[in-house]
Image: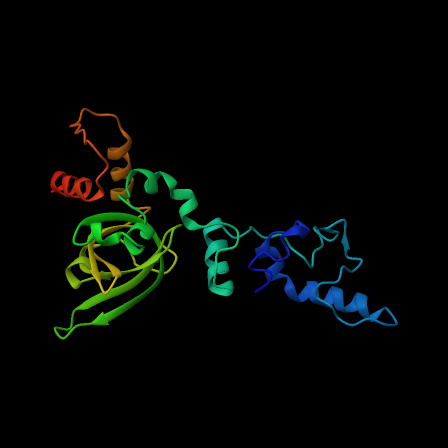
Length: 239
């Protein structure tokens, strides 16, 4: 777990290579310690096989090279083993989608003042934290998910019709675009999904192109920044 979450990155050898050669690494450390009159096996000690924070046996036949985990794999392993992302966040590489596609962030929907969003349609870009399928009385499958962005977490419901048509796999750690209606009950916000797109889908990429390309449009000037009025106008235009 320590290797997979990056605890030994400072040694200059990639995580996958360390992990698949962990037995050889531990045996080398153990043998080094046995040659000393005193001293016990200590995973965090620095034996002679490690010099200047670089392993001296990089080309050793018993310590073969291996391609490192991808950034996505690293983040997934960190979240799985440590419970949090350590080296970054999946949304950091998708800031263009956050900027141009999302109409708000999660904290705006869940924190004080969120009543202005009740029963409005909003779009968020988020990472799936957990997902649970549920079988309805009609034997259809619906989904209850928890998602997060850089501002917070919230619950999302996908009813069977939406779940059947979505391009997203709804897997933990996947980044998705969710368009849905905000439902506030007892100060708790839930997003009832109307559509969900995987961030890597062609539809999502086309959405970004449509939002970023310059085009003629309708411009409306407001006397003041009334969030509720802005939300209603946006909803009318989107419909």
